Amino acid sequence: MKQMRRFICALLAALMLLSGTALAEASYTAGTYTASANGNNGPVTVEVTFSGTAIESVNVTNHSETAGICDVAMTRIPQAIVNGQTLVVDAVAGATNSSKAILAAVEDCVMQAGGDVEALKVKANDGEAASTETVIINTDVLAIGGGGAGLTAAVRAGQFGVKCVVIEKLAQLGGATAASQGNYAAVDPEKQVPQGIEDSIMLQIQQTYQGGDCKAKLDLVETMAYHALDGVHWLENLGVEFNEQMTTVVGAIWPRTHGAVGKGAAIIEKLKTAAEAYNTDIYMETTATELIVEDGRVVGCKAIGADGTNYEFHASLGVVMCTGGFGKNTEMLKKYNPNIPEGVVSMAHAGATGDGIIMGEAIGANLYGMEYIQMLTTSGAVLTGASIEDVLYINAEGNRFVAEDSRRDMLCNAAFNQTGSVYYVLSDQSLVDRQGNQASVDAAVAEGKVFKADTLEELAGIMGMSAENLTAAVADYNACVESNTPDSFGRYTFNHKLDTAPYYFSTALRPMILYTCGGLEINAAAQVLDAQGRPIPGFYAAGEVAGGLHGSNRLAGNGISEPVIFGQIAVESMMADQ
Ligand code: ADP
Image 1: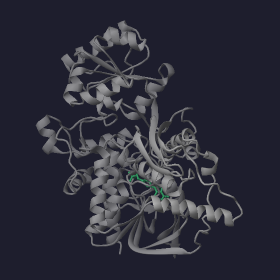
Image 2 (image 1 turned 120 degrees about the vertical axis):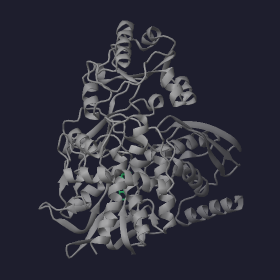
Image 3 (image 1 turned 90 degrees about the vertical axis):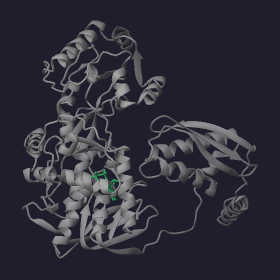
Image 4 (image 1 turned 90 degrees about the horizontal axis):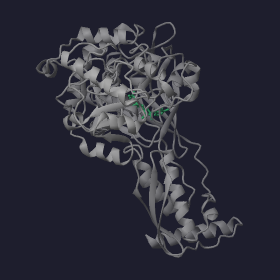
């Protein structure tokens, strides 16, 4: 390996000499150095070992970047630095800040070792012009986007015995689905009845439709509700496990949430494994740029790979657009909803840039509900696991201000009306015990991400809020739990009193952009429609890229059922349409 590196250094030197640039051999004070630089979630620490003339190894020794999203950067960037003896390394798509942090920390180590940072930042001329040839790939089904919907489509295609190709623009699969809590809404009497939960498909339809202010397409809502439980069982057959306990997560408004063990990442893992078992070809870091239409039928797409390779993917059965939403595309957010309050941060993932909507619109697809952009009151998930049961939202004055089991848009609007648009999530030891997450809560307390005190008065003091207000708010709530009657805010979810010390508060939280409800208009067969409401032949859409299911507001739990249900339906329709 060392010999190879020396050979590369020598080769580079020879090339530079040939191109007229003198290259002094790199020189370092041999040894191992460490440095940190800030990534997305905090410092990324590296350890770099130098010989007298080369960077021998780069290891990331500590970081708090998001697992799954940063994985490729953590291995690829160090490797590229060592292999190329360079600091000119492209960031990994979707993990730009993690990549930059590694590069910055290594740069610091180079300086400590007395190396020439500027020389390492000169891009070597590899002399290879990017190929101008287009690589043609033929398949039966093409899924654009490797999140929940795209991988579901791939597995369903495999189950029909047809070939699927998935293209994914980032360096990791999973999109919003992988980053999610993995909460899937489905009426399930087998689990709900023993827990005393009354529910029905009709109630789910009604709540979903009304929860989106009746702006949804009713046939899509019905399709989702009737297929939801089958989707749970379909995932279970692929190895996904769901918790026995059904809960109400923030904005779900009813206890019909199946929480996946291992969250959204586990769902993606099982889908990926199944898709691979069906010999799905997955093209990573390959970005679809435009749809190919022949005689009015969508037959494929053009795409570009990370190395600049041009592709044309041709699909004999159809193309299913699965590119997710546009929560990370500031221009589109502003264009479609200029009323989003200034300064609201988006928690959407890096791939949520609306590409599929733009590509679809360019070939005549109709867009539906684009102005409906969902924000979320992040629930201080370390405390609550995203469940809304047994916690209170408290404002800077120490008062409650909303029914915590409301719709997400109502929670956000209420939060925007509080001082500084902030709120704090309050919980107690009994919830930590029920959730069994003492270790992660303790870690959050140590990191200053959660505050803890033995009494509410003490906790109010730490937070700088009125102890009188806080104790009164908790006493009122506990009285409602005892009598099990709705409180003055209209909250009806009362399971456990909040009365067991120590008490915990999240840091100040603000609503964030989570999800875009609008997109390519589809019908219940997941066919994409044109402006006249006619299906565009060969063109299907599933998941967040599609519009019409949620209306103005998405109920929690429907963001996972949606890609799983409509990803399957898209392929089933494709098969039926032949
Ligand atoms: P859904 O839940 O609807 O499946 P996700 O957000 O889980 O949505 O997945 C969408 C995926 O599509 C993401 O992984 C994203 O990176 C990918 N994607 C977005 N735009 C493109 C594109 N132009 N080409 C290929 N993949 C894309």
